[in-house]
Image 1 (cartoon, rainbow, N blue to C red):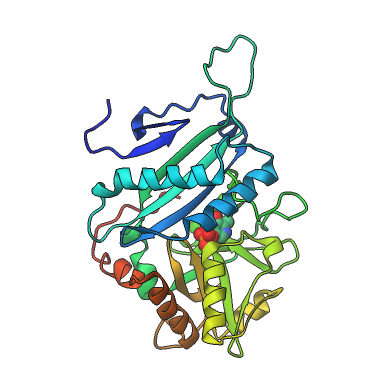
Image 2: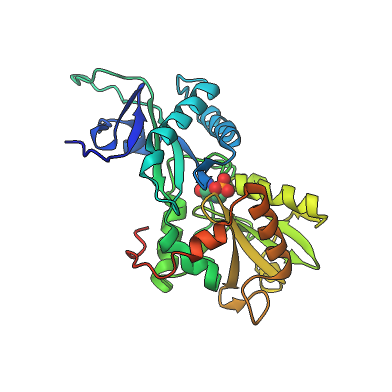
Length: 316
Ligand code: PMP
């Protein structure tokens, strides 16, 4: 039975309490990871760049040849409604991830008795893991590069945000077995830096901002935001093939993601990156300040305010 204060999500045309969602076990995403998703966040309860996330979502769906049965503007309207229906559950210091998920639908098997065979469409929101990630903003992120290489674009494009994260999950599991606090950043099949399970990476070298080429990574919305901010600040920025030699010799490094926005990297494979006496290098700090101005919200403070909270250990 649904609780009174339960979050509401959208499920195949209806707004329902989350616990009432029933995805049949023949759903192609459950069986094969055959689906796509996207995810934005709110800042002070305001949704960030929803249109850009939905554009990327529809590019992922087009790549997978899945028709969600809703237009992008309908998906935007549904997403806004889901957010509004759950806004009252947010504490003043909290914010949501707001996500859209579509699978190809139910695999047809003789004798089955499902009443719906179209694509499965879910729009949901979940609280950001602010307390779990607070330490990253105090200490910087320890990055390790796992042995598994990021899926090659000629096998499956990493530019599509699909429900199949196994390549990234296996890589993160390996890294966490070595150091539970470390974050994986995978190399691509050529030995260049690619991306993490939910993040893009940037290096600073000779005052220039460098990030792996889009062909090999998800084109992160936060990545694009940082590139736009760099342009506005007059910081040169370009995509490049970057290997571990580049990483170890970087003056600064940081990760970008919807939830983190941008967060400094403290070390890569044990090699200290950035200034010795603090975690924010000068260019990373300038970009962070510009990000805070852009979203009109101090996300670093939002994380650091949660430093002392008890947190469950990282699930995955
Ligand atoms: N790479 C991968 C594989 C991701 O899952 C994510 C998270 N969406 C990112 C990069 C960062 O993208 P964004 O800035 O849009 O969150």
